[in-house]
Image (cartoon, rainbow, N blue to C red; front, top):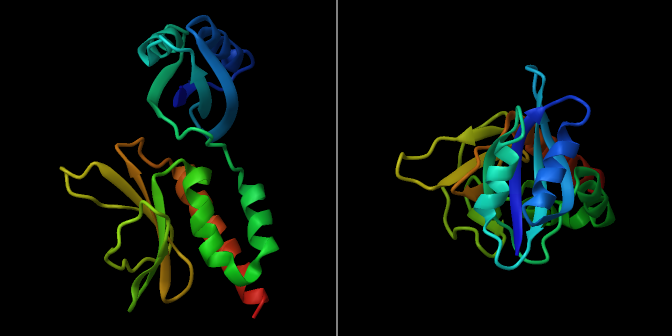
Length: 204
């Protein structure tokens, strides 16, 4: 059963190896690892895509990782079967391959790239003009100049982030239940939206 584990660990040689050993000893099999964010305090946040053996509780993986000195498990959640980690450069290659559909293709790629539940392209006057299958049919347009986390009511379980595509459109992504969007993820979202705009405009 696939799970996505987000861990905070010291940014020193050997830390990731100790986490990998703990995961293996607790019945988890690592399929992919991606660095989410390197922090100024000497720590790093990693996303680990892993498969847990039948009969193994994910709590045992969490306990094993937490027992490693300096390691904190920030999040663990089920991950869609067959899901894969799409790196930013691979996403850009996809956009470049179809510049006339760069905006829609970006929306298609964002759920895998950022491990979110959905993504949508929102027009100032027309509302949602394109979204992935789980995206809400209606969203309120947000006036933003830079990529941001969007404020949500206290009882809302979905976290939102948004970035501007151009003067009339923004991209919104939603992650149900967390984890919170890291600063680096917000920056990456803005960067990818800017690249999509450049690719689409160059094709005009």
